[in-house]
Length: 223
Image 1 (cartoon, one colour):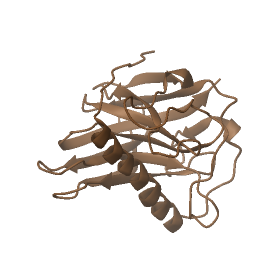
Image 2 (tube, rainbow, N blue to C red; image 1 turned 120 degrees about the horizontal axis):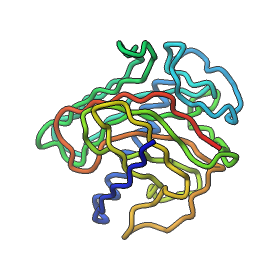
Image 3 (cartoon, rainbow, N blue to C red; image 1 turned 90 degrees about the vertical axis):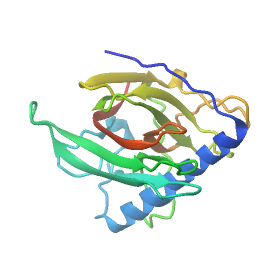
Image 4 (cartoon, rainbow, N blue to C red; image 1 turned 135 degrees about the vertical axis):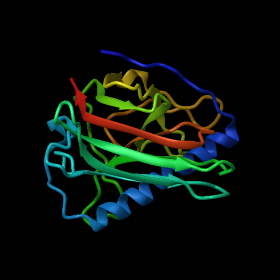
C-alpha cells in the first residue's frame, strides 16, 4: 500500500484562484446531478463512495460524481468522466479525461463527488467522523494531482487536501484525515472536521497544462 506525500506551495493570489476551482466543482457537479436520476439514499457509514460496480456514477451513499473544469482566461479546458471496465481485471473504474490548453490562465480540471440536496441547489454535508481517512485505487498519466475535501467549516475556500501521483500501474493510496492540510500563507486556519464534508475532489495541480487522464476505483472511507 503506497501513501504519497508530495506538496506544492502557492502564493496567496494563486490560492484564491485555486479556490475558484473549488467553487466550480460545486456548480458543475450539482448541475450534472440535477440532470441525473434521483440518487439512492444510503447512509454515509456504508464507507464506499465510488466502486462503480453498477456501471453508474452514483455512489452507494446516494451521491454522484461529475467532471469539472474552469479557467480565469484563455481557452476553456475540457473535462469528462465515465465508468469503464479494466480489460485485465474486468473491474469497473471511473475514468477522467481532460485537457488544459497552453496559455489558459489559472485553469483546473478534475472530478468531484458530492451528496446533493433534494433540489440539487447545494451539496448536503455528510458526517464521516466514524472513519479515519480515505483510500482509493488509481492509475494514470504519472502526473501529480490533488485530493481535496470541501467542508462547511471553511469559509474562505482554503480547503484541506493532499497531493497524490497517478502512477502508470494501479496503486492504492491511503490518506488519513490527519494528513489533509490547508494551503499555507493565506486564509484562516481551520482544523479539518470530517463531520461536514460537502465535496471530495480529485484534480490537477496549479500551472498544469496539456492532456490529463486518470482512473480511480474503490474509493472509500476507512476505519
